[in-house]
Image 1 (cartoon, one colour):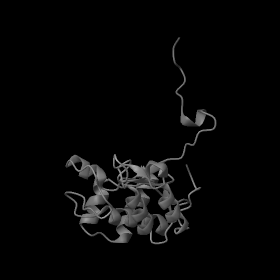
Image 2 (tube, rainbow, N blue to C red):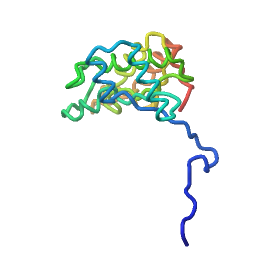
Image 3 (cartoon, rainbow, N blue to C red):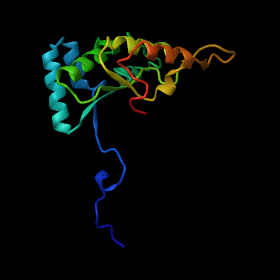
Image 4 (cartoon, helix red, strand yellow):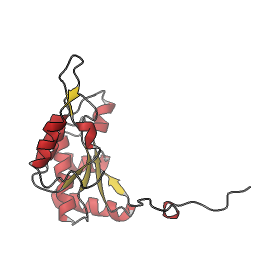
Length: 178
Protein backbone atom coordinates (compact mmCIF):
# COMPACT_ATOMS: atom_id res chain seq x y z
CA UNK A 1 0.00 0.00 0.00
CA UNK A 2 1.33 3.39 -0.97
CA UNK A 3 0.99 6.52 1.17
CA UNK A 4 -0.76 9.00 -1.10
CA UNK A 5 -1.94 11.62 1.33
CA UNK A 6 0.38 14.01 3.12
CA UNK A 7 -0.94 14.45 6.64
CA UNK A 8 -1.02 17.98 8.00
CA UNK A 9 -1.69 19.07 11.56
CA UNK A 10 -4.94 20.61 10.32
CA UNK A 11 -6.06 17.09 9.35
CA UNK A 12 -5.90 15.90 12.95
CA UNK A 13 -8.99 16.80 14.99
CA UNK A 14 -8.65 18.59 18.33
CA UNK A 15 -5.02 19.62 17.95
CA UNK A 16 -3.62 23.10 18.44
CA UNK A 17 -1.93 24.16 15.21
CA UNK A 18 -0.74 27.61 16.26
CA UNK A 19 2.99 28.24 16.23
CA UNK A 20 5.22 30.28 18.49
CA UNK A 21 8.51 31.65 17.18
CA UNK A 22 11.40 30.78 19.50
CA UNK A 23 13.64 33.83 19.80
CA UNK A 24 15.26 33.73 23.25
CA UNK A 25 18.42 32.12 21.86
CA UNK A 26 18.25 33.48 18.32
CA UNK A 27 21.71 34.52 17.10
CA UNK A 28 20.51 37.53 15.11
CA UNK A 29 18.42 38.82 18.02
CA UNK A 30 21.34 38.37 20.43
CA UNK A 31 23.64 40.23 18.02
CA UNK A 32 21.09 43.06 17.84
CA UNK A 33 21.01 43.23 21.64
CA UNK A 34 24.82 43.14 21.86
CA UNK A 35 24.94 46.04 19.38
CA UNK A 36 22.42 47.94 21.54
CA UNK A 37 19.80 48.09 18.80
CA UNK A 38 16.77 50.22 19.58
CA UNK A 39 13.51 48.69 20.76
CA UNK A 40 11.98 49.73 17.43
CA UNK A 41 14.62 47.72 15.56
CA UNK A 42 13.92 44.71 17.81
CA UNK A 43 10.18 45.15 17.26
CA UNK A 44 10.71 45.20 13.49
CA UNK A 45 12.76 41.99 13.65
CA UNK A 46 10.17 40.26 15.85
CA UNK A 47 7.33 41.36 13.56
CA UNK A 48 9.25 40.21 10.48
CA UNK A 49 9.99 36.84 12.11
CA UNK A 50 6.35 36.31 13.02
CA UNK A 51 5.22 37.26 9.52
CA UNK A 52 7.81 35.02 7.84
CA UNK A 53 7.05 32.02 10.05
CA UNK A 54 3.28 32.60 10.21
CA UNK A 55 3.51 32.23 14.00
CA UNK A 56 1.02 33.81 16.38
CA UNK A 57 3.38 34.63 19.20
CA UNK A 58 6.76 34.28 20.89
CA UNK A 59 8.35 31.56 22.96
CA UNK A 60 11.44 32.08 25.09
CA UNK A 61 13.18 28.92 26.29
CA UNK A 62 15.96 29.41 28.85
CA UNK A 63 16.82 32.84 27.41
CA UNK A 64 20.48 32.86 26.40
CA UNK A 65 20.97 29.48 28.01
CA UNK A 66 21.67 27.59 24.79
CA UNK A 67 24.87 29.55 24.23
CA UNK A 68 25.80 29.22 27.89
CA UNK A 69 25.26 25.45 27.65
CA UNK A 70 27.69 25.34 24.70
CA UNK A 71 30.24 26.84 27.10
CA UNK A 72 29.57 24.06 29.66
CA UNK A 73 27.43 26.25 31.94
CA UNK A 74 24.88 24.00 33.68
CA UNK A 75 23.05 26.54 35.83
CA UNK A 76 22.11 29.87 34.24
CA UNK A 77 20.35 32.52 36.31
CA UNK A 78 18.35 35.44 35.03
CA UNK A 79 21.16 37.96 35.54
CA UNK A 80 23.99 35.79 34.24
CA UNK A 81 25.63 37.11 31.09
CA UNK A 82 25.29 35.11 27.88
CA UNK A 83 28.79 34.13 26.69
CA UNK A 84 29.85 35.87 23.46
CA UNK A 85 26.89 38.28 23.51
CA UNK A 86 27.30 40.28 26.73
CA UNK A 87 23.58 40.43 27.54
CA UNK A 88 21.65 38.86 30.40
CA UNK A 89 18.73 36.49 30.27
CA UNK A 90 16.67 39.19 31.97
CA UNK A 91 17.49 41.69 29.19
CA UNK A 92 16.51 39.20 26.48
CA UNK A 93 13.22 38.38 28.18
CA UNK A 94 12.28 41.98 28.92
CA UNK A 95 13.12 43.11 25.39
CA UNK A 96 10.97 40.37 23.85
CA UNK A 97 8.14 41.10 26.26
CA UNK A 98 8.24 44.76 25.33
CA UNK A 99 8.22 43.81 21.63
CA UNK A 100 5.20 41.53 22.13
CA UNK A 101 3.32 44.38 23.80
CA UNK A 102 4.45 47.03 21.33
CA UNK A 103 3.38 45.05 18.28
CA UNK A 104 0.21 43.93 20.08
CA UNK A 105 0.54 40.17 19.92
CA UNK A 106 -2.70 38.37 20.80
CA UNK A 107 -1.16 36.53 23.77
CA UNK A 108 1.78 37.00 26.11
CA UNK A 109 5.29 35.68 25.65
CA UNK A 110 5.38 31.96 26.43
CA UNK A 111 8.35 31.49 28.79
CA UNK A 112 10.29 28.40 29.77
CA UNK A 113 12.29 29.66 32.75
CA UNK A 114 15.99 29.09 33.22
CA UNK A 115 17.24 26.26 35.45
CA UNK A 116 14.54 23.71 34.63
CA UNK A 117 14.53 20.95 37.24
CA UNK A 118 17.53 22.28 39.18
CA UNK A 119 17.32 22.47 43.00
CA UNK A 120 16.36 25.95 44.22
CA UNK A 121 15.06 26.99 40.80
CA UNK A 122 12.01 28.47 42.52
CA UNK A 123 14.10 31.62 42.99
CA UNK A 124 14.73 31.78 39.24
CA UNK A 125 11.00 31.42 38.53
CA UNK A 126 10.14 34.18 40.99
CA UNK A 127 12.86 36.44 39.57
CA UNK A 128 11.39 35.80 36.12
CA UNK A 129 7.94 36.87 37.33
CA UNK A 130 9.40 40.03 38.82
CA UNK A 131 11.33 40.73 35.62
CA UNK A 132 8.01 40.97 33.79
CA UNK A 133 7.52 44.37 35.45
CA UNK A 134 3.75 44.10 35.19
CA UNK A 135 3.71 43.05 31.53
CA UNK A 136 1.79 39.88 30.67
CA UNK A 137 3.69 36.60 30.59
CA UNK A 138 2.88 32.91 30.47
CA UNK A 139 5.20 30.62 32.40
CA UNK A 140 5.12 27.17 30.84
CA UNK A 141 5.62 23.89 32.71
CA UNK A 142 5.64 25.74 36.01
CA UNK A 143 5.47 22.47 37.96
CA UNK A 144 9.19 22.00 37.20
CA UNK A 145 10.14 25.34 38.79
CA UNK A 146 8.94 24.75 42.33
CA UNK A 147 12.08 23.13 43.74
CA UNK A 148 14.09 24.10 46.79
CA UNK A 149 17.41 22.78 48.02
CA UNK A 150 16.45 21.53 51.50
CA UNK A 151 16.55 17.97 52.82
CA UNK A 152 19.23 15.34 53.08
CA UNK A 153 19.59 15.15 49.29
CA UNK A 154 19.43 18.89 48.70
CA UNK A 155 16.13 18.72 46.82
CA UNK A 156 12.72 19.75 48.15
CA UNK A 157 9.36 21.22 47.23
CA UNK A 158 8.88 24.97 47.28
CA UNK A 159 5.44 24.87 45.67
CA UNK A 160 3.89 27.05 48.40
CA UNK A 161 6.52 29.74 47.78
CA UNK A 162 5.82 29.53 44.04
CA UNK A 163 2.04 29.85 44.50
CA UNK A 164 2.57 32.85 46.79
CA UNK A 165 4.60 34.49 44.02
CA UNK A 166 1.81 33.90 41.50
CA UNK A 167 -0.63 35.65 43.82
CA UNK A 168 1.65 38.72 43.79
CA UNK A 169 1.82 38.83 39.97
CA UNK A 170 -1.67 39.11 38.42
CA UNK A 171 -0.04 39.67 35.00
CA UNK A 172 1.02 36.01 35.13
CA UNK A 173 -2.13 33.96 35.68
CA UNK A 174 -1.53 30.41 36.83
CA UNK A 175 -4.49 29.01 34.91
CA UNK A 176 -3.81 30.61 31.53
CA UNK A 177 -2.29 27.64 29.67
CA UNK A 178 -0.93 24.27 30.64
